[in-house]
Image (cartoon, rainbow over all chains, first blue to last red; front, side, top):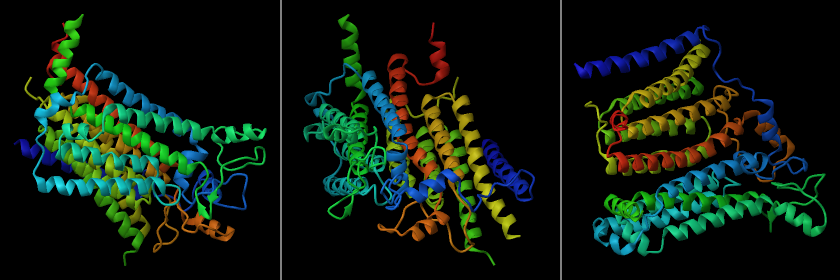
Length: 275
Length: 89
Length: 136
């Protein structure tokens, strides 16, 4: 009886989807197939993203998505990063007062079998290497700081599940260090955003915040290529710093989430009995 | 004679229906661990949709997030708070 | 005939994603467990992201050649190469917006998970009906 109810529900969902699609196909609900053309704004992005002749607007990167994320709409991404920062800070604030003391975690340091541990050691190294490659080639191929950081955050998670939180803390990935790394990444992002201004100020001219390539009204900018290889000015630095910020931020969260619950309860009771 | 375009849209339609199944099962399932697994099925279908819709950047960020990190976080939560979507009143 | 079939198949995917939005909203509103609400909320945001990517897609230049990702393959392009590229590449702007939205969405989900954990520590349950009864 209960099984039938779900079968009927799924069938009705699929059938109503098909009926709507059929109604669209015979012209009842307008035209939803994407048109062969593209919007003017998108066309402008595609034309100017890497055009050495168009010095005024180009971002000098073959990767249009990374260019929009960190050059054309860099300020958007700066505020998105601050939302990310606040969400992680909020998580840390909810777990305030709970110190990760390695000695108290020793009882939880069992982990899995040696075969799994050896394989995980190799795999974690490979994940970090792939993540760094994704982040550092973000201005040339699909990828960037967000993608690389999210990929790199898989490695500590894997180590945490296969070994234990005790192993992670002992091997030097502590909450304080990750917080320092993450803050360094955020400071690097802000510094890169102001880099053109700083260069201009030292040369006695003016430049914009978040400026990447030299413009006609502000003739300073970071070099598009260093020794023949394309670095796209600020994009490679933004990707590198965002990689650290995202990877370290998620690692902090996993460290906090993997504290055993009875230690947290003891700490909470301790905080309550103090006042 | 089917063209490549029609074939691609057919695969997209199949992936859409798979994601619909995954979503429905993930919402209805009482056992939360199974619900996370169905949700990962739906995420996999979405990852393929992103790939076919020519968004390799999104695939690179969506696969570790939605198939790796996000189920792990929710599994941590389930491990600490209990496995059943409490249906008894 | 072929065009109608294309619209039908593309429509199935689009309406399936819209159905996902509806089903996940049902999960957010009607399921009692906060864990299940979090799962439903992530499905909701993912579906919205897929719709944004669908908006950025473009029709095929001809039935045997698909559009290409918005990434130039030539590091020293000529103006002619660029104009050819702009005729077949998809819209990069929704991809850039979705890219950040996915990562920020995960961070916000993490925050919600910590809130749910705190609720569990204080009330001993994540069932919203029981939490409501424990209020007084």
